[in-house]
Image (cartoon, rainbow, N blue to C red):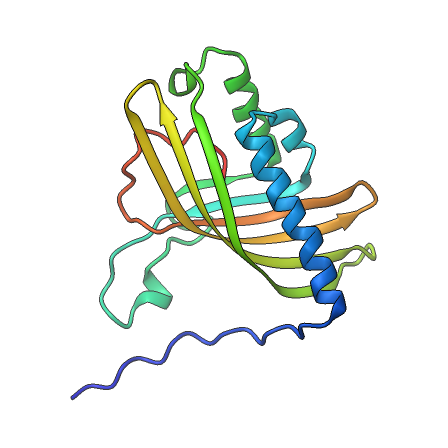
Length: 192
């Protein structure tokens, strides 16, 4: 009988103290506001919540042999194909294209509803500029309806890095994992 492979090492859990819950509440509000802005197609306002040095990445997932998940299940940034590997400039251009009204995949505009849950802080640090940076994990369920009969569900998790700036919280890194290895939607024109 073979032994099961050891699960990947988990990061030490942050202490659940008053600071943790205060920052967590702020981050949750940011994520809920972000979901509402995107659902309401307030793309310009959403872009203002992104840091100029944003890294926005969505790897592809593969079906792999048991025991190889940690090393082979996800594509890697800048080395392999991914669904997204973008920055703020590219996201801005994508949003501007949708707002022209002549975007083939978003004419008519999709109706989208995003749910965000399981928000947890995984690390807190102060960067070189003295700003608080927080690593956040969350799960999402996104429903998209297009035209009359096209319906898509995207389910997955996100690993974010948030930065508290003088203007408020900014998203500076996001890794989105959709838990399917074959994309069932006709396009990926929405934002995660």
